Length: 452
Ligand SMILES: Cc1cc2nc3c(=O)[nH]c(=O)nc-3n(C[C@H](O)[C@H](O)[C@H](O)COP(=O)(O)OP(=O)(O)OC[C@H]3O[C@@H](n4cnc5c(N)ncnc54)[C@H](O)[C@@H]3O)c2cc1C
Image (cartoon, rainbow, N blue to C red; front, side, top):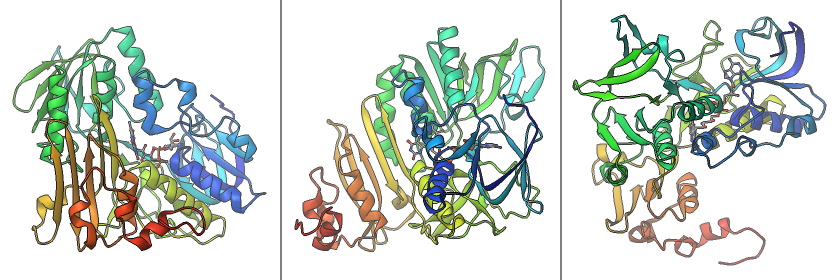
């Protein structure tokens, strides 16, 4: 680690070297060829695709194939990448960011793209010698208990699995990160217990049918799903996890626990500033915070869900990339607007791929008159396709087992296309470009004068 303490001056300073931060840096460089740009990251890896860390864990990708920008990206774009530089404090009056080693990075424009941190539920940690603590204090210290949001987490988990020849694991949380961990462990032949507080997996996006199909698949493979429960206590001995006590009193032996109970925007750096937050940094359409020369993008912000019309933290990679790009353009003087987005998930469990888009279970709390649901379900083939339509527009999709044309559905939702003429066809497996409204088909075709 570079421990030299300095005062550094940059035109553009970016906290975060991932989807949002790098996308912003690219936009800035496109518009401003000469300005100085620095990116701070508290991690030691140059850059990596977060959605791929569980593929690394599963042994499907090596460390040298997990990056999404080439090694020479920073040099080619004249961007200074500052690895292992943790921003610890922001001083907006004097316009600098203090890093853990005492250096001050002065900026003209700042982007906060520091992502989210793992949410740690209130769980007791009981040592066998009867001393009691809490998981938020102990996580990172207990051998065998991990979060999984960074490449370093995945590297440590992989090492732990190899060092201790782990054959079974428990995962707290059946959301996206929990299911991706499950996918990796099942690939490695590790039996799992998924412990999920709600009554179904991926409850933000799935419905009972989709969750049921995935649950059955996991159970058939000899693993376990426990819904409607959480962990009350983690039992440890000599600093290592030994077992779990659930809220129903059941006990589970455990030597590897993944805490995947969601993520929370990380506000540690700016909580004592005038930057307005509400479970995420509040930004306007330009991705500007309440302090004019400070922008924010990605998992750290509360952005806007175009389907619910509500402010929402859209903690997904494509939203972070788009928001970063819009922030970078505005920071470098080219007006751009982020109109909002919607949630998407993609995961594959034991050969069953699932994609969900938008308000994919909104019918649960709506009347049939408000939201129409079109379903194709083939239980034998494990195919389930559900399309939700409100006011003749698709607002949600679950594609399970047959995920073709997810991109078309994405476009129909994002562009709010009227699908009144093809409602009964929308869930079919052969649904494709040819059924789309003629005007929209033209919009999809690349190249002049091509008629479809
Ligand atoms: C296991 C997993 C699987 C996922 N799978 C998918 C998927 O399939 N599809 C999808 O769309 N999304 C997925 N996501 C979500 C997606 O990865 C995030 O939405 C995206 O990475 C957010 O990008 P970001 O740039 O806002 O922040 P992050 O990617 O979280 O990056 C934050 C950056 O800020 C740096 N940083 C943080 N704090 C500081 C500090 N104090 N000082 C200096 N640097 C700091 C970090 O080092 C990092 O470089 C997944 C996430 C995880 C964890």
